[in-house]
Image 1 (cartoon, one colour):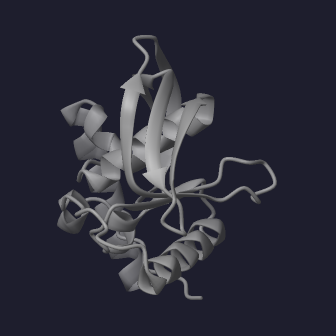
Image 2 (tube, helix red, strand yellow; image 1 turned 120 degrees about the vertical axis):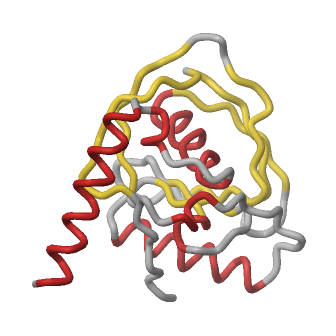
Amino acid sequence: MALLNILRYPNPRLHIKAKPVAEVDDRIRQLVRDMAETMYDAPGVGLAATQVDVHERVVVIDVSEEGNQLLTLINPEITWKSEERQTYEEGCLSVPEIYDEVERAARIRFKALDAQGQPYERDAEGLLAVCVQHELDHLDGKVFVEYLSPLKQNRIKTKLRKAERDAVRA
């Protein structure tokens, strides 16, 4: 397994729309293992392939407190969203140390393939619903800060660029 490099906002590659996985093979299973290792190491609760510069529809999520319930979503699709909304403070491995409130559907239903290529469907609410919606946004080239006001987006870009410059100087 390998730790993968996580792209940082505002990297333009985060806006590339991911393509469907044609076949769940050993290459995809290795990608899932590497993404899981990267997510747990970061640490985070979700990671989309887009964030590691692989533009295929693959997501790993683990919202368990123990970090031992890995969920693999290959070619995921949200098939239903509740009209009820919830606001959750979100963060992102591609936008380090930035957290803000985002409103999303409170409950969803999604379908995907698992790491063996088997289809499944699942209902989600709470943190899992937020995480699935957040990660699927990544696959569609959208980062959570794009839900925020233009002023907040510009402040975040400035802060992250400054942190990057400071890291290069150190």
